[in-house]
Image (cartoon, rainbow, N blue to C red):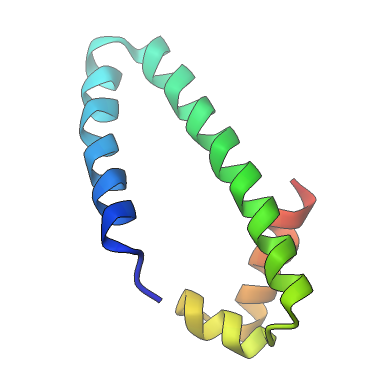
Amino acid sequence: MPLPAPLAALLVETAGPLTATAADAPPAALRAAGVLERIAAGVGRETAGMVCDSGLSAEAVAIALGTTRSKAQIVLLTVQDR
């Protein structure tokens, strides 16, 4: 499943300044990366819970993620455990 265009644009937009900050101020870039990781982990946990509660089949999740059923299940379990 493709990312919504505004979200994809935001991610691309974020990569440039983060990469530039890594070159200019590595500790600041590490801090920013940590913030992004915490945001992603929280959203991932919440979303994985919603996916599991929705009754969506593992096959449907795999198709949406563009991966195999077993890899989709691993992603869901890993994200929920964070």
